Length: 281
Image 1 (cartoon, rainbow, N blue to C red):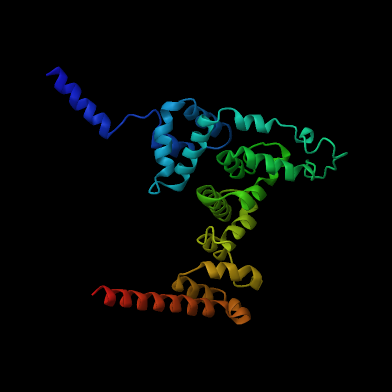
Image 2 (tube, helix red, strand yellow; image 1 turned 135 degrees about the horizontal axis):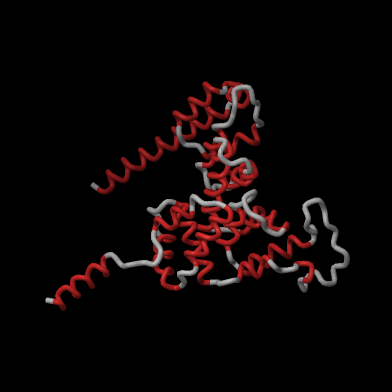
């Protein structure tokens, strides 16, 4: 009887394995800031290798919310590369081999030497601790980093790729949206970054966050609006925006043009579906 109970318990563990970290731990981490965030994150990281399978599972699960996936990546990276980001934070980039013979470096009001930044970005890219960089990117105004890390947004825009890049775009979108809602006073710094992610096709849905702020009496330029309209595929949203801000259509004619493009694409897709169906028959 005892062996049977143990066998059943073993089956239960195979179906529902016990992990040292849970989804609720990651969800709670996502609600914290500053020292409370650091403490909770370090608590997960201290679980060490036993936490790795679950963190990998969450990171790779596209059905999970993006934020818990991102935070799983943050914790996973710190477990797999212990102390490496902290070492980078303490680096004196002025003594880098590529800068030793550069002569006097000129600092500006930013607090860092402009000549250091290309080398700084190069070294970060070589280290490849992208989740730590995204963590820094997502905490502007909420945490203290060496002054050169103020340029981390440039590194993320120019060098990130794949899932890391999509997380960066979602961080920018959520922080800027929180700013517009009055929930994040420093979130405004993400407007240009989000615009670039929209413009290059990384995160089209971010266009809604920016277009929602366009006011009837605010005459935005065509160079700003065109990438945003190109990212929108909701005709009802466009028609509502046209009514709310008639100056856009009057000055640029972009809304009717974009609606025509969407309808043409939709018609082409319907024709392709019919043609494919006929061929299959």
